[in-house]
Length: 140
Image (tube, rainbow, N blue to C red; front, side):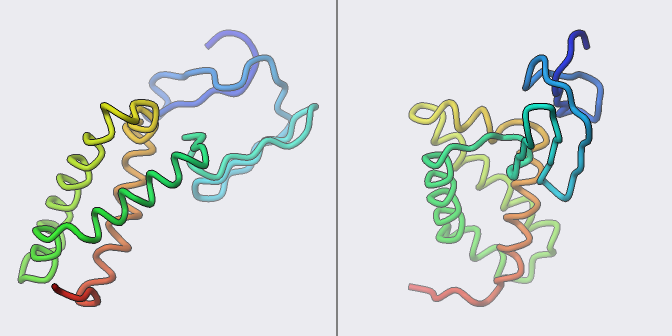
């Protein structure tokens, strides 16, 4: 690392990328995926694990979540006698497939969601919600 500013690591500190140049940080506080940086210019906040999602990205993510919740094979895997680990494996495969659908039309969003740290967080949180809702969906 060289130069001042705010840096971000997605591999546990092995490599760092500058995300905000030449800014002095007086204090930094983190709570889950929300980070607060007190600077001479004011308070900087990220609430999405540093992914910097746009309003359009958030709409696309909601669409992706709807596709996950409606994926028939995934619902069948969750509602059968599969272990949680097996359901999670299937869940992550389905989510990866849905994310790949965005490559051609939403490359910037795909890059944000493919970030190692953001991707791991997204998969964990979405899986927890998906698995917790076991047996609550209506079948067609």
